[in-house]
Image (tube, helix red, strand yellow):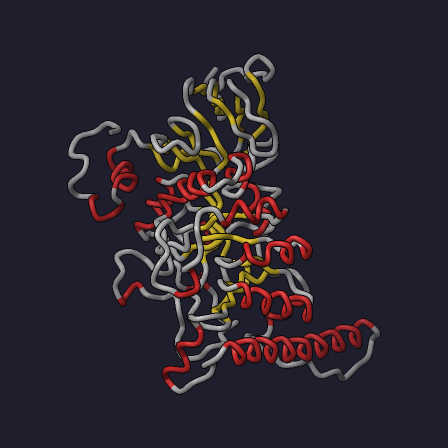
Length: 424
């Protein structure tokens, strides 16, 4: 009898995230899903399975990045690849990231080399409303193959320094006041648009005739999805006062938000915790370039954790290369965050921030077999990503010369290192 399509990973230390670590574990994978997880001796290995012995290694769930621009601000960074910001106007809800994502971006291979499997690819933060985001798995040759079935994506919004750059060109917004006003005007328009369609739908259901169909508005349709809480707003916001503006907007119009960046979130941690608003942090180890991040330190995520705020880490790639997302967790641990909290902030918490917690983010039966094999403990500076799996398929292998190049230096070294096979 031939070998089945069942893959068994055996002997590694497992960090399920949803439960306690397992010193020597077994993961059974069938048809891209995790069928069973548990300690050696407690999990039945199906006959004719393909078994990989990973003794001495570590397995964690695939990393989830809630804020990235890979594929839309592609490598190399040249004008031809700069599709992140539509600068013709500050309010652009009709734009879709999926229409500009380049699946062959070398940055995607670099992300896989860092253990990243699921990503929220977003437009940039140059606009008050940047457009619709895309929730993807880092696989496939087309955006259709990358998109996660059933996911809606989010809406990218921003306030603070970046959108104010329109003021330099004599356009609005030039102040934080106008940023908020533009946002409120948009949501009021969307409320009215929603009422028209609700009235039309009700009239049709009642059998009324000669009802005029409202005209479609591509600008307002995704905003209505936000009002209906089908689409999450991913809000670029740094300073604590800007964060409070976002909270006021969300409460006024009753939409769901994820605070993206949140450099000053630690100053209003209690407010975020009380409202159950999550925060996805870009943990840079050398802040600079923006006044908004001057007082950010690796100790800030621990403040949020202690306050009870759901925390994630993101790369904002290219700001931080996706190869180093796991390292952000290590920096947070060094700053006082618990190891369990830091690992959750890279896996299950960001998955939940994308409404994907039932599919990815932990090693549990029934979930997608997205996982990362590490050479050692997750937050050791000596640990390397050895392999990355998406739905049971190995999409990065450090033993492959064509893969290790993306791990050790990215696309720029693809033609010169390593010259011979074998992991280094």
